[in-house]
Image 1 (cartoon, rainbow, N blue to C red):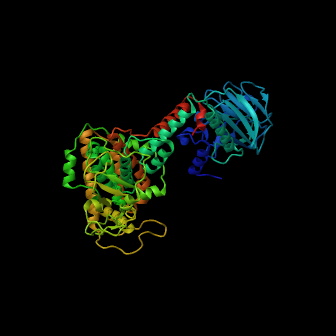
Image 2: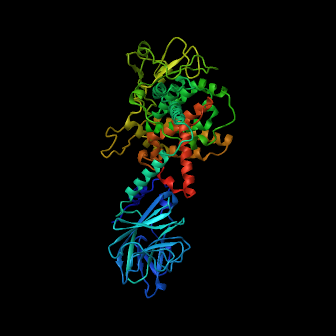
Length: 622
């Protein structure tokens, strides 16, 4: 039987989940170079043949695996099946370091360990060996398990453990097999196929032991202090990611208090939700209103958002009209203070290490609403704190949920639906209200750390239908953009037919030229912005990669199945939302990362250092 590389990786991942790169760190075959001349290999360098005369011990020949056993495995196991015992069955299976002579059987020299077929003895630097297990011959499968935590080794025969064979093993051992008489043939299984021995159960047993050791480790301080610390970092995590309802409930149970206003947390969550819904233009506009000057002070962050906006335009979720690019907004942006450039490329690279926020309840996501104010205030004036009482029924009844009509990028000379529907049936024509689904009220309310006579309430329900769009229209635009980029003509007609084939593959047809031109024009502006950033702050490979991936979507008739189609995955919005959220927090002198994520990163770093230092127990720590 043969297995694909993907199937092989899946098996190895079950055995060695802590290895960063199983493809380059684990033994996968016998080495075509690290073998004696009387050995030949076949079957993808997994089968070993002896081709010598086999008259004396000088005719012994061994071969080592292509890589040593990594300490990070914790436990390592491989099996060798005897295809033919040959004339005498002088076969040795075991381990050796790279310096050991290959003109011998495993166990005959220092730093060499072997279990031999003809007498069942275990050999370690001795010629006669010591009684260990039964003999083995044609058809038998012998396994070798290395415990890198205790530096011991045992063997198995046909799935049965034979007991401890060696202790005090050195590091950097290679799986090794030696043959000595004509006709001997063996074949190895380094994890490409299921093992005869239940190695997975052994791994689970060791995992339980290590976890028990951790849990029973004595703490240097009273248990109550640890509980208080864990509650604090958990609460800070909820606050950081804007899970205000969950944080409020947690605060009631544990007595935690936040330094940030209740409404400020909700505002940040609202902005994150806009990004997660693909409404990047709306997120940019909300950020500028709630945090003036933030995006202009962090040009790479603005570039990241605009690249994501371009991708959402191609996907048909966002539209260029969603971003406030009016002359007034441009003037306000130009007037904002511009401190020294801080983000450089870090805001993009930090996306790789940002953890995905924990899920909130369906009711929390459905009912989220945020009170915001357009002007920044200098101090905290009667802020609402967590663990406060919920709003009264009369207050809740006055809140309106505005539902926006479906939005597609086919805007050109096709107007959007002019009316906006609301829960109570009233429509809105105000620009801000149409954009966010907001309602103006009288009275002053402290929100987002800002104050002012004018405020607006942003409801979380206004973007539920927008993400649906028109499937055929949004993908038609991509095909049209492709022809536009190649200098071809754009058809002004629309083919009426299936938007998606039976197999789920997108079928594209023509679309209006004005819609494509909007995307292409926005792309030209992105290119100019990237060039300006290079002139002012130097090259940034991360920005170049963002732009390249976004523009590459226009080169394919079916962008979702192209090599960069993964950028259209809604999951790719999450690191963008996290990066924007971190920037907002940092602008208010709050931590970019919650302590809980820092603890997780420090633990991962500690585990990597344990692995490099030869502390194999880290393989069983999650």
